[in-house]
Length: 383
Ligand code: NAD
Ligand code: GLY
Image 1 (cartoon, helix red, strand yellow):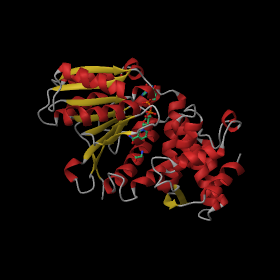
Image 2 (cartoon, helix red, strand yellow):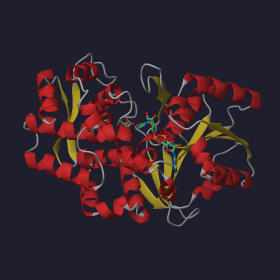
Image 3 (cartoon, helix red, strand yellow):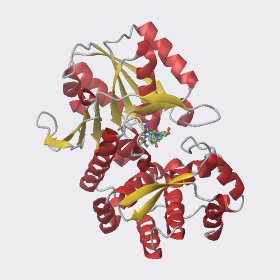
């Protein structure tokens, strides 16, 4: 599947439009518009989708405070839409069934129907929850993504995975539901707290090490600019990550053929590390540390050499990513519990351990049935 790239002349001249053809469902392809300070183009973009008068913006308390949802609201009102804004409390706890019930009920009171559009403005929490509400309310209304965190811009807003958490497990209830389109403003990253920015970099580095040599080289050469959040560089990084993810999703939308799983480098380790830390270890940091464990596992399996692992660690450190577990987690960690959690991970196959492991910079493959003893050795040896 080839991505068609064209300059979007109607909105901000710096914008890039990616048309994403989705598997054989070509009519559901959508555009990802990437630019800087371009949120006021949303009215024009959504005007292109026919017969919609009512729009609900879903945002969170922080994103609203920074004013991003107001710019989106003004642009939509100026374009002639009847706009209502729903604000959830910022944080993962809002990705819950309680929020969903509240939103479904509010939508009913507001008279939202299948001609309406839900616009999510915020990070992955708002995007995942908004997409889930859109997929389920009235058996499905249209939705549009405006991701404002680095993680959401490079990962969660693209590809149609939407859902909510159960108290026992993250992302356990949900579906695949593609948006009408995605609008990305790289300038919105300027207000991100450092920790959220670093978490986004964890996913960026994941793409580079496991799927894209070009991105890896760019990251290696531009560590200082990355730390300074250089706007032009960020636009390139976001665009490249969206291209990589779009390509993979277009080949395996429903995670059936084994292709989409390749987006999960470091994630088998990461999910268990998040759980054993009681979610004190943020997802993006867990992915970074998990990716280093995955590289060491690949080295142990003879798939890459020591030099590969060292190069990855050097890159991670240079852009501010952790390469090892924080001290407070190291002293309490229980390796058997980690292995047990990995075996029960949503992505394990009938209890068999399955890892995405690198074969060289920018390439990876899925490796199954690894002896848990080897994994324990990798975990223990490096701490
Ligand atoms: P988030 O949505 O909680 O955002 C992180 C924090 O940043 C929040 O406090 C938010 O209010 C704040 N914020 C957002 N934009 C801001 C801005 N521009 N300036 C300042 N503050 C801002 O978290 P996230 O890291 O964006 O996303 C994590 C979620 O994404 C998790 O629920 C995870 O499961 C999900 N996820 C989904 C996919 C997918 O494919 N659907 C992929 C990866 C992660
Ligand atoms: N974040 C991995 C995926 O969307 O499949």
